[in-house]
Length: 122
Image 1 (cartoon, rainbow, N blue to C red):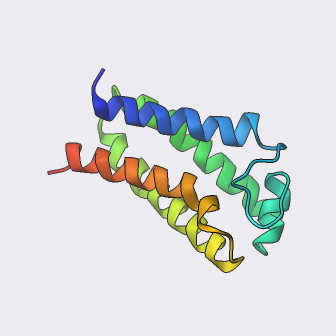
Image 2: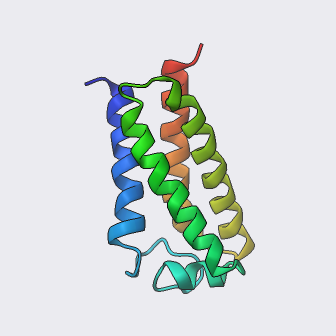
């Protein structure tokens, strides 16, 4: 297994963990004073329906990151979509004046995306 595949798997497992297993649980990284995903989106001033859309997109991206082991053409599009979502997440943390610690997950994923792109594009 290559470094790129390991990074893809780390991102995919992380997304699935957050959106399926930790969805209704408090973490140190939730925006504002939120104790679950719904409260986090409310803290950002976002509608609840958007939470479900973002969640569906992230789960789909996680699945496609794994599928891109075999269908390499999926990788770049998924990385661009995920990077866009992570930049939006960072903007939401800034909007509610969160401490930088709460941005670590999004920053970590962006760093892994940059590494994957460095080793695969070009």
